Image 1 (cartoon, rainbow, N blue to C red):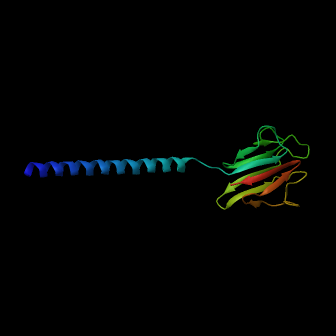
Image 2 (cartoon, rainbow, N blue to C red):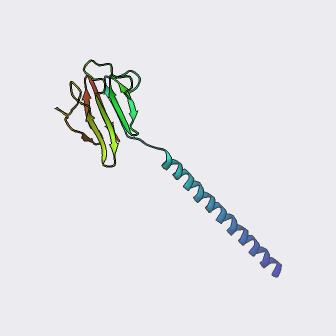
Image 3 (cartoon, helix red, strand yellow):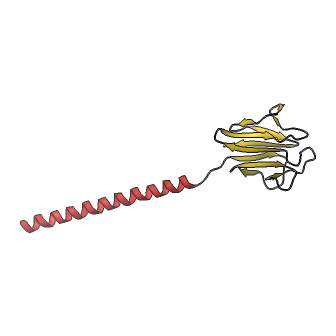
Length: 137
């Protein structure tokens, strides 16, 4: 009787240990998969809806994006109505902003030309020359 009871207790203890290990591994695995998803950086994007260079229509906004005809711009436009350094989209602690860089023909948002920096929200559209852009968070 004593040997049978000891054997049953040993089996119960082994089942409890295996169950604990299974649950611990499951929790750690779930934490790793959540941490992997959290480290993938998702930057806001500037999308060219119409006009602009061929093949490139989506640009991540890490710090700022400079838009214009000059080759040093992040988005280079082949448009005679765009200035060399026409506009920039930039990030601050207060959000994302669009600034016209004193361009000749201006930058429009909606139906009006912008004069000062304008805050961008999800889906904001703006136009430079013949190109239309959209801000996507």
